[in-house]
Length: 328
Image (cartoon, rainbow, N blue to C red; front, side, top):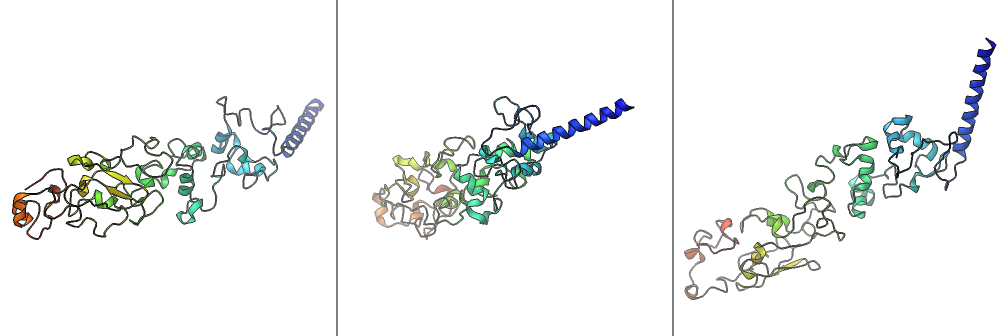
């Protein structure tokens, strides 16, 4: 009996001693100290912050393994994870990106918060999504923090319409800064070109851009935060030589605006939508400059092009206008 009582007292004493040693080790960790180590004094298990061995475990603790959570992290590292708790060791030594490591700043989910909104923060990082994936998972479905980005971004954060476009298509509006007015170069005349209208059939994205193979395609996100123009065959029809000036937001020499071969040299401004830049006679003269002979008889366009225009020169079949050939 005495032996049993003695063993109990010994075990209790050992537990108290280990508890004091643990508390001492935790409270004495300095701001610049390495992660705690040793069989007793350490707070975290081996491999807690070691990325090189494949035993990187502290992310798993946030999942609930090892009796951990982000709340229990705050007990030692402070409410803001900056080392103001018992440990005086900031998590931001490793987690130094704009999301402040383990937490997000106020306004992270509020578009009205401007630069603290997560979309703006990701834009300043040139849309590098690796920081998001470290916590939310490679598929953004929750990862170690069990908070899914797909709740808001059903098409994933890398989906085309997450950054630009809308539910009807990938082209702006909105642009990558959330702008919706045509006076912004990111929006401009996209919809005027991509929707079938009175003047022509709808154009394709590839008439002006190289379609990216994926979100991380270098041709998609290359650092200057502007889409590059790479005119397709349509713009160069009839030996036209199309040129885009990103500073002036103008196109010149495109077949779509006559290329200067039909009497006028129109240089439309991308951001001046609805100002009459595409009215009859702005792209080609009436009759076109290349036309000779019988056109000098002042015949109406509809006499020869009855499938394209009516007697008042209104386009009646937009698919036959600006289509790379002459239709009658």
